[in-house]
Figure (cartoon, rainbow, N blue to C red):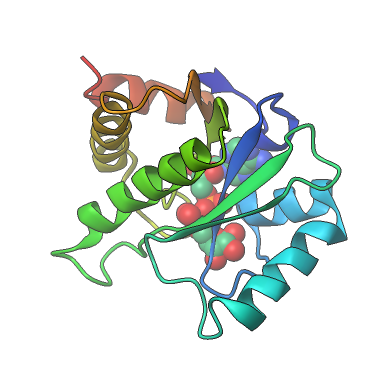
Length: 170
Ligand code: APR
């Protein structure tokens, strides 16, 4: 766990809390596109044109260049908007972590940084998200040998404190 800006993390891949358009936004999405430059958006547009013409579904993940970021890759995933699908939101949030980790492992990526997906504009309660994210990461890593570091990046101290209190790693 670290406090800081995900765009500054020196890992092989960082995860973007994107929306289904893959065409940018605010928060983490805005920060990554601003810091990473236009090549990231170009590859997102190509993914929309070829693989996901109707947009990236919630819970799915795709990978692009990291552009000018320290990270080589950006893995874009779309978290659930809290309250949209009450009986599926935890499963969809878990899928964001699992599919991002799976993509990283498939690309022989050994270090990956996550923001706190869905807990900003998408309104997922941070305490609930902490349980879902930690369980999904723990379960994935128990069956994977490729990934060596999963870094959880928090923008504010209080977010890190909430995560620490509600995580279920141990
Ligand atoms: N580095 C790390 N964490 C960050 C950063 C950053 N540079 N900027 C924001 N955060 C934190 C927020 O404080 C929040 O805890 O990331 C978490 C996720 O917030 P959002 O970026 O709002 O992501 P999300 O809640 O998944 O909403 C996604 O917002 O930006 C738009 O295009 C995006 O429509 C999508 C929606």
